[in-house]
Figure 1 (cartoon, helix red, strand yellow):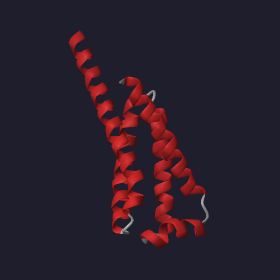
Figure 2 (tube, helix red, strand yellow):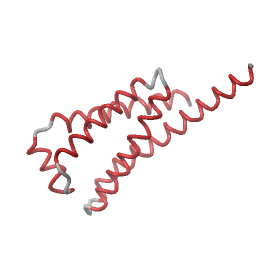
Figure 3 (cartoon, helix red, strand yellow):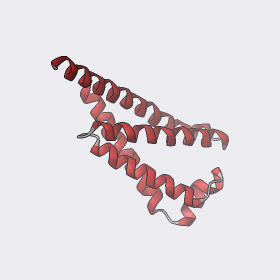
Figure 4 (cartoon, helix red, strand yellow):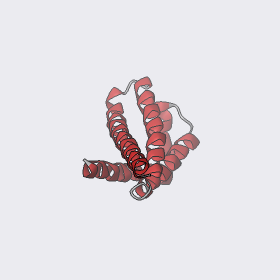
Length: 129
């Protein structure tokens, strides 16, 4: 099960890194066409979401070594995905909410695995003392 969590973490790293960098390096007109006009958000907000996704993806990469970084990134990205789902449903585009929902499920799975691993590690270290 440990390897499944690592594969999920890797898939999430790649997905959010691509998504975040796409938002950061897209032109203003493309941001307006894809996000601002259908969802009603300011382009600056979309660039901020891209920065959050990119930095959280980098924290997920660091999370292969430091589990707390991956847990913090998972929580931040889960909040972003809940917002993305709500935005798509509000914009009457439920089909576009499927991918954020899949990402949210994977993030929750990863977070549960990280919390369990951390709890098991703490339990083992207290038994040795």
